[in-house]
View (cartoon, rainbow, N blue to C red):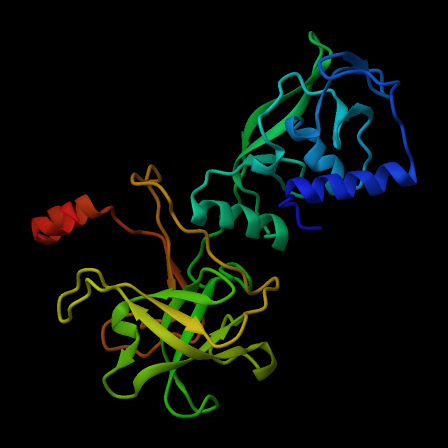
Length: 316
């Protein structure tokens, strides 16, 4: 079930559960004390102010009704603190709660991880626990993230990785560049990859593979609809070397095809970065058959110091 509930959806799901198996208090008004079926102390509040109701409805559990305010259910909420709007909350399969940030990339990342069941958990979720002193439920932050490393990547380890193909025929295409799947339609790549000097513009996309030599049924291929380079990219300059590639069809997700989460903050606190791709393993060496991962990446400031990059590189 998709948990991006609107007010209408919350009430529709709620009403269907009440019809099936109703548990209604005798007209307790909003703000009244109530006791749950488990004997927990609660408060009668709007269904839109109780964070736990998001998980309850996702699990098809029925909240206990105190009364109705017009058509709005007033429920017995056993959370110690109440929120302003349950529509701003998402819940993953582990029962962790996340608040929407109103930053599109970040919210879509949470949505994808929850809906598509990634092999890892998000960071920053709130875990519900019983506050014995107050006899109600509170929430505490938790941070769990699975990260794998190594030279040869494992199958499904980087499900966002995409090969970009060039040529007139999909079967004989040359797969020369890589990119990152970021949605059902778009691949993020380098602007210099949208055209090959020898083979022309990028025309094909391949996802779900680990090796170039993978059997044909593991390849999920799509045609390119259009490319969108950064308007600030002016080759041969290396600055602003970034572009989007749009697929001609909706890309289907599975365990080996999932979008990457984009960074949404200005500062990066992590000390380790990973680069992945099917590029050459060294100078004058051929393209790698298997997806490679490199973790010994230095921060920009260190690269500027070592290689004497122009100051504009750091400033921009």
